[in-house]
Length: 168
Image (cartoon, helix red, strand yellow):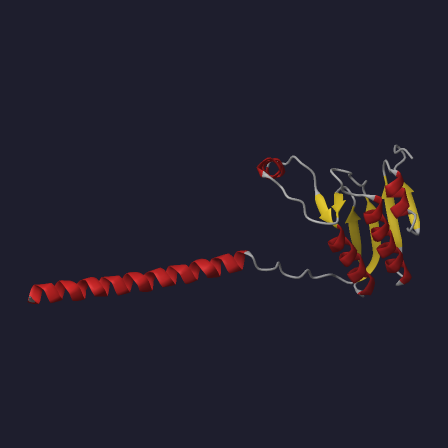
């Protein structure tokens, strides 16, 4: 009987230790996941900085579902770049009120993959650029081979530069 109780107490102790170790591993796993998903640190913007908007992207108003093929192509460097409209408009609006941002510089040509970069999205960006310009800060644009939508956005700019080998 004595051996039975020794074996029982040993088994219960081992079980408690196993549960305790499992809880510690689980907590470390959750902390690790939380640190991966945490927000990136805020940028340190120097005085007299210029916000550069690279338009070599597709602008969409909502995230799209990406299947395995699209995810694989993006990971391999294929596919196309997507910028979400509301993030772009928010960045322009924040730059208008940021004292460290002194100007805005547009360059590139909009990509029209899928249903992205439609006229409604471009109109919202143009309105955000007009609001930025009302803050008294200049807008500059550099175009290579502009489409009508690119020129529509650049028409807000104080100065537009076109590549000598570009086409209009």
